[in-house]
Image (cartoon, rainbow, N blue to C red; front, top):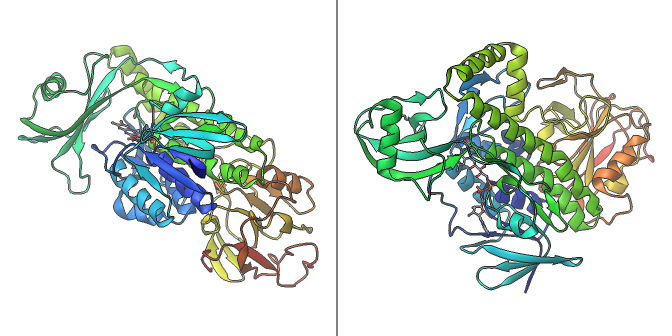
Amino acid sequence: MTEHEVVIAGGGPTGLMLAGELALADVDVVVVERRTSQELDGSRAGGLHPRTIEVLDQRGIAERFLAAGRPMPSLYFAGLALRTDDFPSRHRHGLALWQREFEHILAGWIDELAVPIRRGREVVGFAQDDSGVAVEVSDGTTLHAEYLVGCDGGRSTIRKCAGIDFPGLDPSTSWMIAEVEFADPPDVGTRPEGGGIGPVDRTAGGGPYRVVLKERHVHHDGEPTLPELRDALIDAYGTDFGLRHAQWMSRFTDAARQASAYRAGRVLLAGDAAHVHPPQGGQGLNTGVQDAVNLGWKLAHVVDGTSPTSLLDTYHGERHPVGARAIRLTMAAVALGATDARHEALRDTVAELLDMDAGRRHVAGALSGLDIEYDLGPGHPLLGRRMPDLDVHTADGPLRVFTLLHDARGVLLDLGAPGRFDASPWAPRVRRIDATYEGAWELPVFGPVAPPPAVLIRPDGHVAWTGDFTDPSLPRALTTWFGSPSAPARHPMTTTLRATSPRSVSAMDDAKSRSGRRAETNVSRSSFPSA
Ligand SMILES: Cc1cc2nc3c(=O)[nH]c(=O)nc-3n(C[C@H](O)[C@H](O)[C@H](O)COP(=O)(O)OP(=O)(O)OC[C@H]3O[C@@H](n4cnc5c(N)ncnc54)[C@H](O)[C@@H]3O)c2cc1C
């Protein structure tokens, strides 16, 4: 029997991202992956949405993906292009990047973090009790862990073994997807009912082409064949464009389901294991990666012993509604794609509404993930929303707020808040930063907000508290998200950041005065980039 703190079943986008998050928090994690390599047989998901690029930026790895992809000027809802270029984000555009490239780059990061991946074997079952989870692997071994996370896709073995319901809609349409060579130039572009034809290499153009076509029948046994694809092309375009060869063919439906619970004791679900829906709107991969970023630090705190297991319930509480909204949007997109006269009239009406700024921003905000707001109660509009990537100044120079999140620890950002507060009891999990910021505060979709004097930022980049240091809710917020002050310190703090301007200078703890004295703020982990 091998011992680990966490076993992740499945090394797709969600499992890899979660592995990275846990490794950053020094959790002993292992991934068990059915595939023998990271290669995918098809291109699958087509891109990253702005919030996904932001969460990668929060870990300092966005550039790797940006360098490999191409900016997408718009996101698409039911074939309607929605601009995102007026959202206040450093990453206001999506990124065209096939899933196979995304996984390859993400796996490189996991490799750097030295997470072991047991490839070519699968999790076949598990048993859990109060002491942990015994995870059965297809090679006959058993891994013993404190927690098991099912990131094993839509047909999740973990979800089924955990007995978690997966209610939702049965399929009403089926779609064929393929990467093919044509002898004749095809009609490139989207189709009114969804799908269409486009180059696999979206920069160079030309063949091979990716084809997505609605099928005549909903139910099929197995993967599509070349004659079926030819028939579907002729149905849609009146020609098969001289279809020669298919490198990859598959099919998907508009079935939409969501796990009724994201946690059953020591077992959690994330990504497609927790929610499936058709790819219209391109939200599957993005939602899974963001699930992982919400879950990773919470699981790390629980494994670390600094937070109670109830912290894990906030994972379901926060991410289940986000998954439900993604499902709702894709259901709407599929409905709007129907080609009868009534649905066309509905689609034209929706198109008119989305031409209006408020409508466009509302739907683009949801697709982009930039408007996600976790319900952390009433308060400043920042509460529960993502922290903007401000350009702040510290004693060590200018830096972006996202760089403070590279090591997946919390941040108490003091922007000149009145009062004193001793944050040192939480210091291993939260670093305090004294900084100044003179610019505007604006949230996507919501608009401008009043500058907060201080902000508590969770490792996933969401704001857990705003206020000043006389506010009694600050220690409560720190305890809720980062454990009790007496919880054991596991990660030593090594480097420092200091504030510059008199406005920003604040004390690290009660022992230091705010008046003109330069305060030092510990920064955990020596790997933190010096500003
Ligand atoms: C044709 C197609 C097009 C798509 N287009 C888009 C798009 O445009 N945009 C978008 O965002 N999403 C799209 N998606 C959805 C996207 O591919 C998924 O949402 C995404 O892959 C989910 O990632 P995941 O890691 O949760 O699950 P998966 O990618 O399914 O990964 C699960 C992993 O677990 C492994 N595994 C399974 N069972 C076990 C087991 N028992 N033990 C160990 N390992 C196991 C699998 O080998 C796999 O590597 C598309 C999907 C398809 C099929």
